[in-house]
Length: 419
Image (cartoon, rainbow, N blue to C red):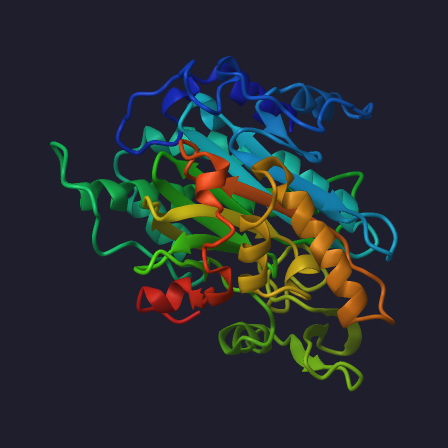
């Protein structure tokens, strides 16, 4: 990790997220810039961290991984009733030293050391991603890299067929395609490197522990999402009637998906549900009823990596439009009890943007008690990223926005692909 930090310190990071050499640098008037007057809320108290590398990360002003808010995002996590909070989250503004770029992620750990795995991935994934983006930015021919990496697993991707803005001196479709290609290669490399680092980590035993990860990089109006596991990203956007609707941006990568189950069985892993929970498909070792993992892709869990479990992310692209208002990243402690429609409604009706993540977690906790009164509440972690920062909160989230008419739309289905 120290060598990655050294790369971040020494490389000129201005163009690290760009495949075509876009101009960059800090913009004092940017909402994500410290000079704009944006303030953290709830992040002032800092606990001592044992690792010097973690302490150094904790000192980065634009990086936030505790309950609070900035002008662009709201974060909140809450421990459930099952023990240590194994969820983690992060928002990193001015990512790669670009004022128009932000990195967000949530991570849901599981197993004896799940809390350590989730936090370690939270810390090292964005660093590795930034380093890989810097390397790819200088590589003008990504074709060979694409072939070598993408052969590891077929990954659906989504590139918009039309761009609402007219070309500005260049082929917009080609530029977006190159941007997504560079980001996709970097995501794939990064997830592979992070999983390898976990395997070799001297202090965290990941044999029976792992984590999900749903992450995004937003640069200007370009959005790329990388996902493993069953955490989820959902977009709140306006339809043609100006009604707020929920669009699911990721697929829950569970063993119940036919393509995931087929891969696991092809590698001698077993997929079946227990009698007392027939709706939950799990992954098992070939000759042992263990560990019963309820997801088909994850970091860690190396006991299953030879039997069909992978850490290869699904990577997708979306062009943000004026109708897109916010994105919610959350762990399954939220999605197990609230629908996409519920989540968008709760975030939209929160008193303030800064309180939106907290409002959602509190709503999920109440829903757990109603839906599963005899079960222990799960941990919850939420990141709400707001896209229309120029609009006042009262304009974006009006009480009369017909929230009862919210519809759930699959991102893949809406683009002609199946989740």
